[in-house]
Length: 413
Image 1 (cartoon, rainbow, N blue to C red):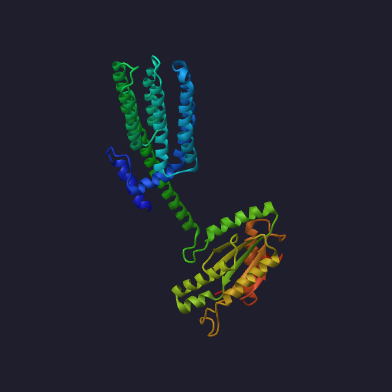
Image 2: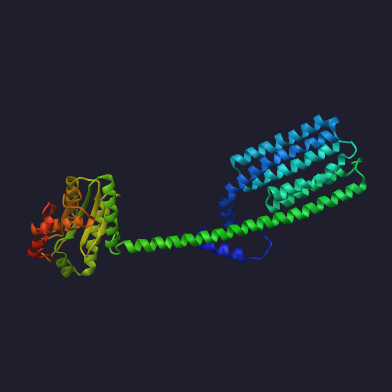
């Protein structure tokens, strides 16, 4: 069910004042899916608790009808073994909502039938006092388990029918006592059914409120995630922006300190990009940057961080690789972009778009902070530009001391 449709259905149900309990089909299916496991566990626990309570009445049986106690014991055990145990096992294995409620209803009806058989088999004086306890069976079915309201109504009607059929012609019980028993069972049925209805209605309403809040919080979380992603993503190339790169550099630096593993940084600058933009215009220039960003992503690992940190400047942060491996990665990136054969007539008729790359590694002696790694990579990039562009330069120990000299000599259109 789509979120908007589900949200509308939830709001509609919360505003409804009718006495109907069930939801529209899609929402009802969602309700059952979300509550099935919890309800199944609740019914299993209730069955386990109700079973020993049911057997407590053997003490009453032994007192009032000791002459047929063996028969009574067989009836009660039979009800548990033939109805209760199979129902418990099927509930434990998991069944559909309809069969779940049907199995529990059979347990309740089974308890009533067994009690009626025990009562009918006994002719001892005062044994009819059992009838006044029959209401406890309805209490268990309608409020202790409790059954879903529709099943509770049907189960209650069946139980009362069995009780009335048992009382008809049961001579040891005076007529006045029968009337009182009927009044008691009908009153118990009404009270417990009303309670059952309220319990289910409250459960369903609580579910709707929880579902609405869960959906709202989910939407807020998604919105926050989208905003967070937008704030860290370059909208043109759909890779990380400068902010994401700086955060990744700081985090990578801390991880490198802990693991004592090297951290490598590649600074990639597009050669003669101003000439490309002047010749083709900015829309084509944007498409060129997108293709270069895609090439960078293709040559990076999932754990690497790719970012656009300037107009035509990119960064690639590589964790746990050596200087040689970082240099080889930079060369693969450079060759891949060169292999795109993007024409750059702004430089020369046969020219294509290329990149220059500066590489720095945290294991170098001069690198003592993330900013040092960035400065060293920038210095290496200037060396690559100064050496003729379309090449990779691995930072040397003295590179950052020569960066001002190199940048003063280099024209980087």
